[in-house]
Image (cartoon, rainbow, N blue to C red; front, side, top):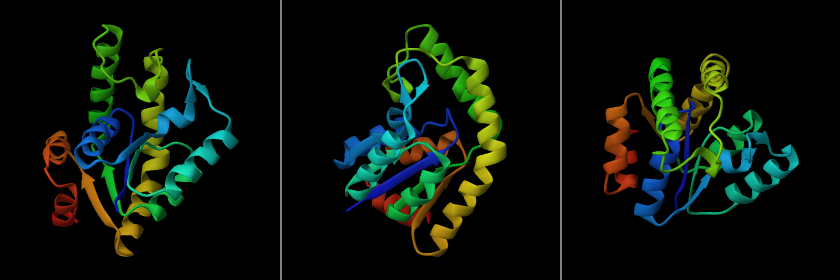
Length: 180
């Protein structure tokens, strides 16, 4: 039984990693952006998000990526068997998000966040990345570190190379065990 949470700032590769690991290990993949946003980047009703989030984390054998509502992160971490924290430098999130925006605007993006058809405004996306880095990430790091101290498997990804290594790994449980 695996319940893997992948957390981190926007543009860091959470969903791409989650899709690869879910496919390789036969786990259900849930993307928080699909719970959080309606078409046109309109926020989903909070009660709808909360109920769907509760349903997902109550199950087994899943990978759930993304941040969502701040108050839902702790319950997701509590339920997880493994935590992957993508904790790259801020500039890398800006870089990767810019690459995604370029791919999206040129029609070359294979998987849009949340399956949405409209690209988010770049200024808003970059503002969100900044706000998450400054306001959310310290608390998320603390939650993850506390979970690791309590015995959860935690992997902190600090570079694109580490992210790619995890995505290529044949057995995520072994990799997570070796890195924690």
